Figure 1 (tube, helix red, strand yellow):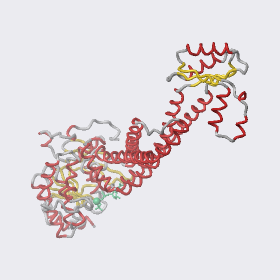
Figure 2 (tube, chains in turn red, green):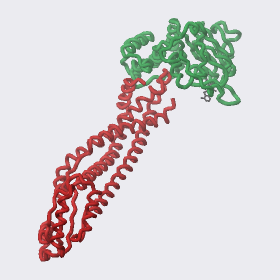
Figure 3 (cartoon, protein in one colour):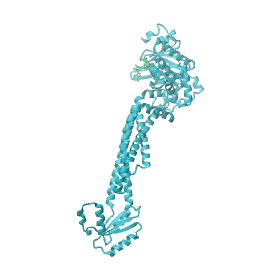
Figure 4 (tube, rainbow over the protein chains, first blue to last red):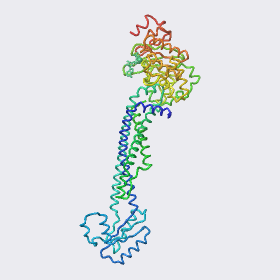
Length: 293
Length: 262
Ligand SMILES: Nc1ncnc2c1ncn2[C@@H]1O[C@H](COP(=O)(O)OP(=O)(O)OP(=O)(O)O)[C@@H](O)[C@H]1O
Ligand SMILES: [Mg+2]
């Protein structure tokens, strides 16, 4: 196939079918924005989960009447572990104070006696410790005599994982839906374009044009539409991100200690290349069906 | 029945291939006992035998619905024969695969009654398309299109839009498109049907000029005023058969063509 000629013809087709294609590209851009926004959500959730997951923490609650010697022994064992970065002993009154500070509730709670709060050991793990490892450390700690309870936040992470899984599934189903939309919409516009250019196609075939020569421009036009829709969506998302990330960051960072991130380079490439590819496939299918040469 | 056979495309009908000497000495077009059915009981063409030599100018005539267009369509493979053979340059084109049909058509120029040119293209673009499909370099296309336009009397009119042209000029554009690849055979299906008698003669003369340079021309028409003015070989089709194959209307036997066309 003569690519240069196909490009020239495709450009002419795009110019002549401008209105038809603008409608297609706009509607597909909306579909791509939905997909991109979901991907943006997944990316951010994933980034947050990774960050929290790696900044491993274990809280060991001590029994009320725990023997001071047992507690000291526990401290020595913990300091000996390679995975442990820091151990902080929190007394009931410290716990009470920090609770009152953070909770920001009314004065009636300040009457709480310190012994409502158990003494605890706040363990910070070195970064990069996997969740399985922190779970196994937690279960070993639970066997110590002075320990009443160990919180390794496993259940919390499980919930986050479920949320992440749900978001990923949503993204995958949206991606499939968008793919279908692109194939359907571009297929349809190309069908219209083929019908409008019936005369030209007939002339070219009469002069001895091969199937590839006749079909090539249409496939390129579909490819361009897919790419343009994806690009438009990415640009719209980028604008949205640039406008919103400052205010969101200031609130989110205070809340969770994480910042909003934009789609990764590979995701962007996948969106654009995928858009172009699916567009090409959509028009190729359509041209095969409606352009019996 | 012929279509079911899988035959490799003839190299002759591939891009860049040239006809060999034995091929050049053969008649350019031979129809052998050709049948074409649109309805099973009533063949449109029944047992047509025809031989056209290289460089001939042939009128094909016959009443409306006789099968003139059908015959030409068999040659440029818009249609396939149901029985018999169509030999172009000695090759049976009925056995061509779909993939090689374009290469057959590059050896043919076809002109129609309704011009079949693209209204929103310029004159140049309409002619150039016949060369663009073979991926000819732009510079070569430009010079050959200019040459073809000059031959049909439209020198320098390349940039004009088709909508600004008269009917006769539009048909000249169609002729230019047909001759620009320098085909061996031109098929004209009532090319003067939409033109007034004066213009019809002009177009006929144009085809004769093309014929004078060695191109074979099959000229289908039922305009007898046109046929009677010239002394070319005349093939008449009626009820699906080649009735007479004569040397011009002047030699037509008996009461003349009018009894035939009714
Ligand atoms: N695709 C087709 N399907 C069915 N019948 C057809 C088809 N093409 C042609 N015919 C029939 O074949 C016969 C011959 O048609 P054709 O077009 O070859 O006639 P023609 O000699 O060119 O007539 P005209 O002078 O009016 O152009 C007609 O009866 C027509 O109805
Ligand atoms: Mg006809």
